[in-house]
Length: 218
Image (tube, rainbow, N blue to C red; front, side, top):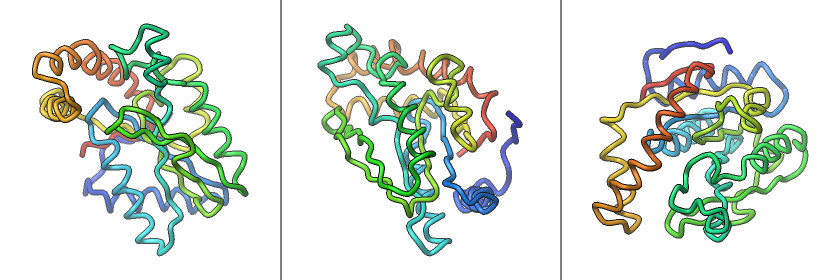
């Protein structure tokens, strides 16, 4: 992929203009992927980006489609003996997500439904998001959109662009601590989860950064 480094001014409004400019060159639905480490700010940036695009265009044409909806259920993770490592690539229905992205490209004149991950219950809600024909810009955020292994590597060809949200361990750590404690873990459980899952994931995701079209520091 051709890669552009961080542009200035580095604001949501700036990136919304870049996205709008890219979509105007195509009459087809535009799919943008956002990648970053756990707690890098993907969900917040995606929501703000979609809001900025919709406000500027004066219509609800953009929508967020999170990859998190494709977490395997806790029951399935227990069956696979992976529940303690929830969040690593093997704990996602990667093929299901790839198939959804294919549907979003090919079924542009009908509604497509996808799951929504509810962090408060640590479970996905089936058909929690409707992508309607008027949604011409899809912003999909997730950890592994740039992994160079099957079936993840298919996503680089399906998305029009994939942007990487850069971060540092110093930024991620307090956010991860807060996230896991809010989810009910105590101090030792939180640090064990970060060491066993989040930090290895962050390193894996960082290794995929060179495949992104753009790198953003928010």
